[in-house]
Length: 173
Image 1 (cartoon, one colour):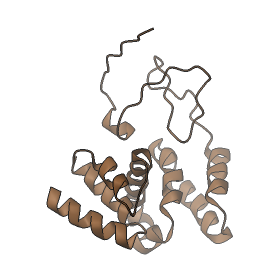
Image 2 (tube, rainbow, N blue to C red):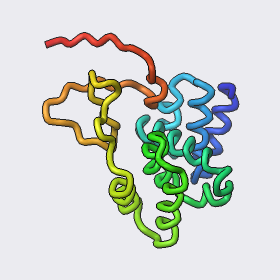
Image 3 (cartoon, rainbow, N blue to C red):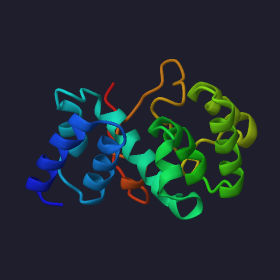
């Protein structure tokens, strides 16, 4: 995707809403456009934090991966927020059929996103150790509460952009 295509799609996505901003976020992330989340979030009709835009891209990626299983129409009938709730479990490798069963219940019973998140936690549990390799704890923004007094390093972008990379962190007291 070129810068011109991004600008054109951003204008259309902002005006049309729905899934379009999330799909644009995913495509911009995959195209590795600079500052894509900030630029989408700054649009006057979108006005969201970059973290929210990253979550939209993550949810859209998981939704796209389920098109072959349930079809494009069924995927896009669900709100982006449902796919954002499912994303951590899909990325952990939870059985796709079991996730689809939870989604089917979500649709048929007309439950809220909060109820869906609670059902996912009850059914599949939380990450057991919640860490990368035992050296540093990892907290997912918007999902995990931070311990009181915790030192935090915030990295821009989705977690997969940082996977397998090493960081040098200097602690200043």
